[in-house]
View 1 (spheres, rainbow, N blue to C red):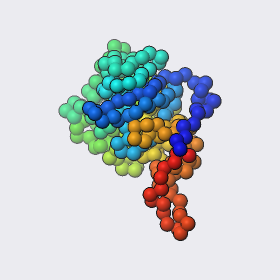
View 2 (cartoon, helix red, strand yellow; view 1 turned 180 degrees about the horizontal axis):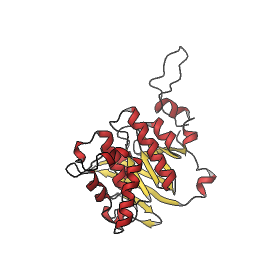
View 3 (tube, rainbow, N blue to C red; view 1 turned 90 degrees about the horizontal axis):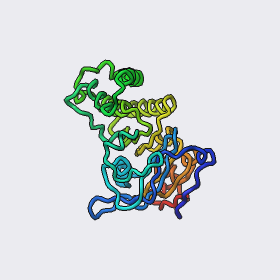
View 4 (spheres, rainbow, N blue to C red; view 1 turned 45 degrees about the horizontal axis):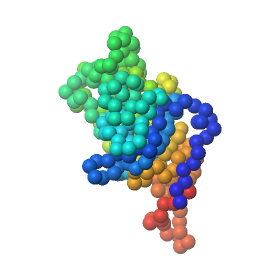
Amino acid sequence: MNAVLAPSADRADSEVILKLSNVESAYGPIKAIRGVSLQVRRGEIVTVLGSNGAGKTTILKTISGIIDPRKGTVEFKGENITAMDPSLIVARGLVHVPEGREVFPLLSVHDNLLMGAYTRRDRDAVARDIEMVFGYFPILKERERQEAGLLSGGQQQMLAISRALMAAPELMLLDEPSLGLSPKLTKEIFEIVVRINRERGTTMLLVEQNANMALNAADHGYVLENGRIVMEDTCERLREKEDIKEFYLGMKEAGARGERRWKKKKTWR
């Protein structure tokens, strides 16, 4: 039985900055997400958990205009942005940090940061924001004139997040920031993501396979299975759900004979 729980009262009092209503997106004949509805409130970190192929990346691509949904609506700050040109969405304050980083490899770190600020005209503020991101990621200051393609994977992830920050976003979409990184670098990236949220008030929607890191960093969470939302709650409560513990955190209970229940069916209690 699916269990989609109501948001907490404190969350209900906050402003909704992003709202998806019954969104369906597909790749040709294959439906990737089916009737997805979710909300992100201003100032939160919200995470979407799910296995490989569940549709997490498709949600972000649909929000940022890379994929046009077949059904449903996407609203940002109360405005319908469904299937809007991605450049117009960025100009409204919503940026997407894609899976796999996708920096401009032949441009320097500095020029990658300037690319993030291409919609802005406030040059003095842009210069201050470059120093701001160097404060979060000092290694980028050291590599400022180096070609981005020569950075390590972790440094490229730092640069991708920093480039997004240079657009002065109100909402950041983060797609698998831990992908391919060591546990140490993953921990460092997540700590800085939380700092950015708390210090700058930047709202974030995070999709991530590392459920433990995501649930500890985020305020609210959704669980996506086969393109559908099957559970929603605060991350504090999600961490205590038996299905989350077993299928996402690797905390399997022992069966009657002391054997692991490897093939137990999800019930989403």
